[in-house]
Amino acid sequence: VSTRPLLEQLIEALQCQPGIGPKSAQRIAFQLLERDRERGLKLAGILAEALERIGRCASCRTFTESEICRICASSVRDGSTLCVVESPVDVASIESAADYRGKYFVLMGHLSPIDGITPETLGLHLLEKRLEGGEVGELIVATGTTMEGEATAYYLKEIAARATVTATRIAHGVPMGGELEYVDGSTLSHAIASRREY
Ligand SMILES: [Zn+2]
Image (tube, rainbow, N blue to C red):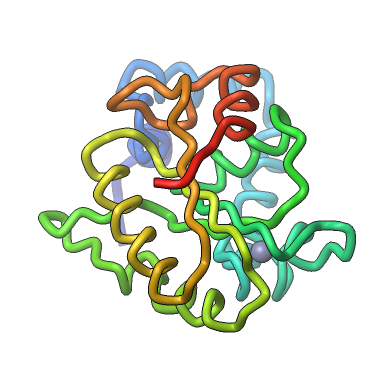
């Protein structure tokens, strides 16, 4: 049991997030205590509930509190086109920027053997099974253009080839070394529209 003052513990706990250093953490803690106690309590409640109840979609691996996410469950989305992205942020970007009606597969990262991120970690065995299922006709690979993103794209192309699924790559307009997250909406929309086999 920690005997340190609660205020100190709060300030330290707030620093668990990237971008929040001691100064910011202190400012947030004081702000919550001075003026935002009610909203702070609401935040604490929703945070606890979200962390407990939000899991991964059994089909595409994105975050959801259901067994299957909204997009995977949708009957109006086209299951023959599957777009592979690195993170749920990318799904949100494509959803808001592009007129994409297919479904997604979310890797939650990219291949990086040095960091111990293997095809298994990224659920690529699940993806492979899905491609073998025969529903998917085109695999749109929208991983970043970083070295790891490109290595992942190469691996995905091989999986697609084994399942005789066409793999297309969005690259046009996405700067080399870039994460999808930082590409603006119209560029992203164009990048998807002008995807090509690779
Ligand atoms: Zn899903």
